[in-house]
Image (cartoon, rainbow, N blue to C red; front, side):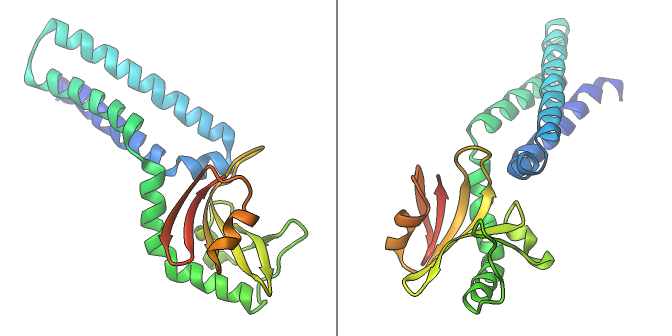
Length: 193
């Protein structure tokens, strides 16, 4: 069991790093200090496992030590190059599409009211649709409707949103300087500002 301990720790670390990457926008939006602490702990744990793995492979070249080192390198590659946010947005778009359309209809029917900052606090059953639990109403008038569901809500600058627009032309007029825009479906966009 002892010879497998480092491999088990590396596998647990890999799983925790993937979970952290998947939920990093929500953690960062809700509590920056927790985000910082979790990432520091995972980074230190990663380097400890990496150093121990190099030490073990130098001492004794065997299958377990090689697998451990390969897992750690694969973890680093996946974290650096896998588009966690993009994949999560596309998956959640499909999962939450019906509920987001219900929120859009509630706004159109004037059952959800925006505050002075053009934000609507979502009812509890819809809070998971936007990381902050709010949607941004960019426009809601006779010309059309533009509503953003937050994926990541920037502090001083950019944010990432899933945006509904009743007319594609309204998107660029309302959302601000768009860094990246990807069409998800009719009237739905994945927008970085």
